[in-house]
Length: 215
Image 1 (tube, rainbow, N blue to C red):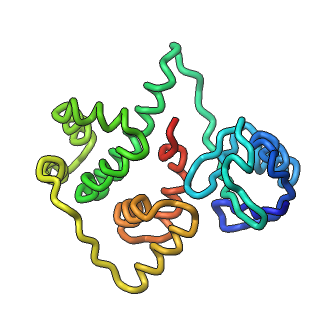
Image 2 (image 1 turned 180 degrees about the vertical axis):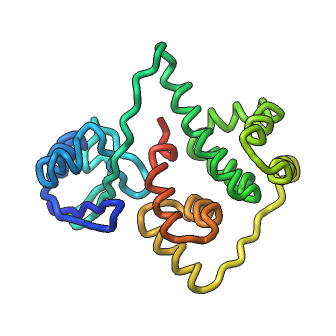
């Protein structure tokens, strides 16, 4: 079957794959089609409907159908850790870093982000709830603005709902971002965190897509 593969730069190309083909095999096809220098297999992340695809799963497993599309992005090469740490700890730390970055950019989104986090990583949310004081200290620690930290604290303690007022143009931008395969909640969070800049929000969502997957 034919699928379309989109890149972060907005380019796209077609690829022939089988329904039972492994994600790892599709990555090799992309490397062969686009060149090892441009898309090295080992650094590829394939995303479908906002979810990072695991190498050992098939196209059918991930509900990739005829004329569907994937997003391909490259991860940065990471230096090997000095000591062997637990994978769960590493992934939790990475996800927390993404959460902290967005909260510092816009403290008002902390509460809806925690709600979304509960769906994506219940274990991490449970840890946050059990250690709220420590969590807020870590959130505020890297923030340059004391007021932002205060807003974050108020959001977590009060838990009041967030109302989002957008123009028709901004609503269209949100819908376009949703069309990339991300949930509306994640799109709104990224859109607000990036000061309603559609391009920045798209880049943020794609660059951090692996943080939204259950690892």
